[in-house]
Image (cartoon, rainbow, N blue to C red; front, top):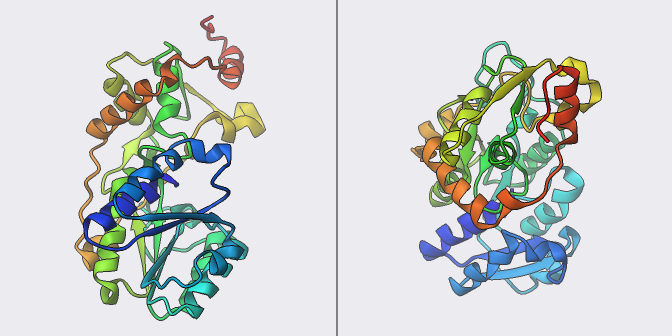
Length: 315
């Protein structure tokens, strides 16, 4: 969720905080030429600082610097997060925040997922959450789900736009009535800002970082089409018929998978600002601006599914 760095850094800088963004990688790499990294100059021009390195190098890269709060938005397992957490502890950091994942919840017969629901013990994020809770006096964990926003490193709305602008059917597994949750990254940023502003209230808490409305899979396709001002043809298929390709064929889980932000509302007084119809219009404008609508693409797996269903494939 690399787009978070830009939103969050700008929000903190605007509130008068000193901000340093530590990015895993090398400044000269090709990766840094792409959004959101290519926009880090906006953070610098706003008074922030950007540095690069590996998690194990954080102590030497930031030697001589002091911080009140550290947010880890990179690690998915303890091996990656431990060097950062141990450095933060030794450096006297007052508050440690970690971006986990709502994907660690076990499937439930009573959706939505709420804070305190059972999680998968073997999930990497779970081990990190446990370590942080044992290491810091003041800590908080945030569990986002599917996010949209400029510079996101995972396709979400783009997956739908890719097909809609090319007049291709949007293939959705199952009935299309499965519920999921899609939030704008600005919601996560505002939640984090509130936690920093009220560390006593946030301390020791887990927050589902999601919007407060669910959307069906069919609904997401329709909203993306509305944002693009184009029609959409939705084709449903049985994911069992494509075997191991099922996970690669669609960007979301083929089941009811959505969480609710109860803790953030009750404890931090947070309110969601996600408005999918409007946010998707903004996202489509950028999609066109960067020229992705004209980019040559192949849809081999889509074509394979359509062929198995005896649906004509557009040339």
